[in-house]
Length: 502
Length: 130
Image (tube, rainbow over all chains, first blue to last red; front, side):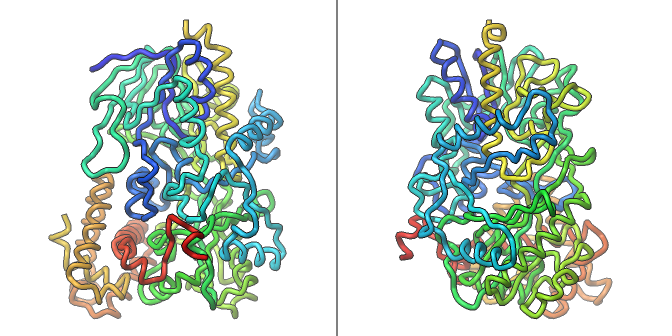
């Protein structure tokens, strides 16, 4: 085993890890050794082909098809330099005040999060796209939603020089999206922070050591080889910041079995379970060109769902449609006339929904759909169908309808046609990409894993800085809130550095 | 990996995507390569379960129709898979969803299939569409 020593080791390079890495540049400038370990590879700009099956297996864990324990939902999260900021659409929202109030974490207030969020909105060039860059898929959503009586909002997005490839979820082929791979990590590296990719942290020891396995680049794979020689390393650190995401961080902590670790590690997992509705129009629309996610309808507080515009690739679309056979094929052949809406449900933390590890030390996500989340999905299905028809769609495929295809004659009976009675776990395709919780913030080990500054209870040298900190669902896209929380974690680490690192 | 289940997999494939019936040998091979790659990247337990389920699909129709899946006509194949998809048993629904998803990936993951349905996304975005 090769031995290395660092003052601070950050695990993960997504919204949390990238933010902490940049914020710790002053430590590096002061001569401290700061290391970032990333399990995935570092891609070069010309490797983003935009082809679904070329990119997804390289970018996502289990190719984007990570299954929950009972196999009824897939979770999508990236493993690469930049983490999931590489593959999301760049939508950038600040946490709602009511949610932070409900979280009720001592020492965490909304004003502080909003101030920090604003700083990252500016840093990441977050803005509204001009009307001429909005495609028909998005425009029809906005028009239809307004006609159906919903309040529509435009997503601020973190792009610079967006060409409208529509391929955000496969990594922007034009490097327009300002994820941590474009902003925070390069700044950190310029400032003296070391980043090592293809480096999986196998275990953290109570002596603050990390066992790290550096993998060789597989034959034919994209991405650069690791900055370190392949092999097993023992990295000694004075402080460790976990930012491996809501699955990765609890997984690593549980696998490490640190004596005295908080018992709630892995608890409180939430994910905004989501499904896709697809509608067919009479005429072709622009749907596979232009930014895919420009508008949303937020009914989280009132009805437990959020609707977002979306446009997915052929396989993902085919997977989203319930069933198979001639009807399924007919909808796929209408691709140039398809409009899509993503329905996300609010799911609050429960005792059942948690992350554990199996004998091999890999994460197993136990997730049961609560009645609240299912009702949110049903109401969201109905709202999306109304919006489609108000926008002029001829047919709507709604997973919670049976049979799933609705026509305009069904508009008066949507509440009956789309019903919870049609929900069959394992039949409809449900997926989630807003993975949250597992190392929740709170007061003590009885109710949480960390305090409001990401300090793991009883382990002052161990911090968490990612979406696993969320004690409950955020009810919006989590990216900016992760950055704001990570900023707090880094700030406190800088304050504690003299005591921790000497 | 798929050689032993090739006939049943192709029969299910043509039921899930009827157009697959018109694929030539090279196109089937391309589809199967995608499925095999996807399976190889999955955890071993998932891989084993899916392949076992494919084999099960071949024999389960004996109970209802007295014939194996590959011996059924197209309408009966469809009805049989629909029965599994709506089964009261989660394991059957999950298995059906998993195999269906793999075959959809194999079919629509091919660039020719994407072109055939009119999918035209291009990294150059608006530049090539205006």
